[in-house]
Length: 117
Image (tube, rainbow, N blue to C red):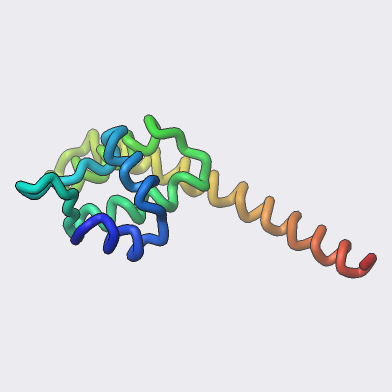
């Protein structure tokens, strides 16, 4: 798929996708004409990036997570990669839990504000 199709599929701007290509998180293949093209694997990778960013992961942390996923997919018996992936899974779960707490707090505040309004 071309960059516009990927952008539409993930709901992110072309600029954002180009940025992730430029920093090496989502390296695109290129046509002879120089156009970026993406695979279904790239789509899955971009969906992971889209999820990791609002959780507060840095580019370097996202790269580590994506590299661990790639390593496990390439060799499911790679114990070191699986261990790294388990560590990252715990980090994602902890950040998700904190977001849940923050969402509950925001919901409570919205309720209070609506009662006052």
